[in-house]
Image (cartoon, rainbow, N blue to C red; front, side):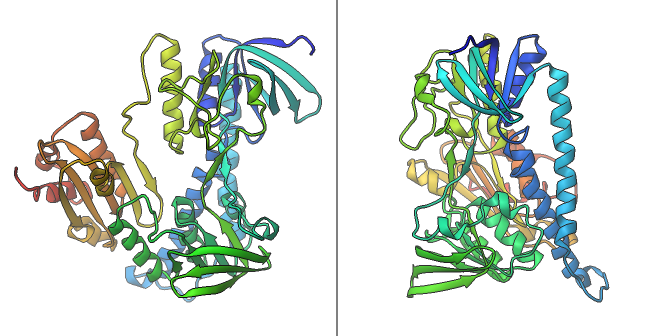
Length: 463
């Protein structure tokens, strides 16, 4: 092996955690190499979070236009131009890419575009995208390898060349009939968006409800929403075999409550989970161990089983959200500078950007019962908040779990207009360990969604 080039820090992957580690280390004057095999910035700004929300918003605008008469808008006809939809998204992505290039250059981090494979502990060989190879060794290595859409082992599925979210978000055409496999956040968001853009959509889910980690009332409300929008929802449905080719004609053979049947469509989207990108980087050369699911084993400080190698984000088994990956970076970086932070007891929020949104922070009822935690429940329809009347967005509800032996907020869930903003208020109270009475007695502006917290918490059963 040729003599490797020496760096203080080697960051592999430029996603949420990796880019901030590279920018911060290099900005502090430490020689840092950042290796990225794909698009700078990772999935979120290029093919995932932000592009999907861009497309989803276009679909919402189109949905509102179709409801135009309700708001006094007169239109003779409405049609969708997918080229224009994609143009808006691609302009956004291009702007985000340029911002990442400028930030990387300004930080002083050396960006190496290519594929890294370990050839020794903390030493990689990089196949550069522009040609040639480089060998780099570092005092510290930070792994931000990300994840990719999992492809379940179903006969005929791979041969059908189905789309993942990456291909679906880049379509310049509108599928005639899209069959979506999976009722998690990717399947939910893209099913609704494609339906609103004009596709016929069938969503196939193996479990008894959509969003199967959420409470049954959430799953039922999402199903009602989708059915009302013309989406065919098949629950408790087992996939048996796939025939045909996505983009032309595809047949999905299933077993459901009524027995065997076949669903015919033109396009197929797989949204059945994620898989860590740990299988092609030769981690066996490093002493870094994987768990049974292929994620990197880390402790609560995100240290791997190899000295001076850390893992962050999806590949470390962290909850698969950009905001968690950025928090992973903060934990590792602060600890390198004398702090003692861990991933234990993090209060992690999430939001599914259906319309209306589904947002949750803390425990739901199912989790509280599973863990034997007694709680008081308050629940209220969104329609009782006057703000929803002004915007004609009445659907959904919110609920909060309050400790049975105190006034601590255990969890908050909302399905409705601006649910994510309501969640942020509840999360702030939870982070400050404030009793629910602080929100109950606060003066929120009228008419806003936040004042619904006053109404919700006025109904808490007194101990």
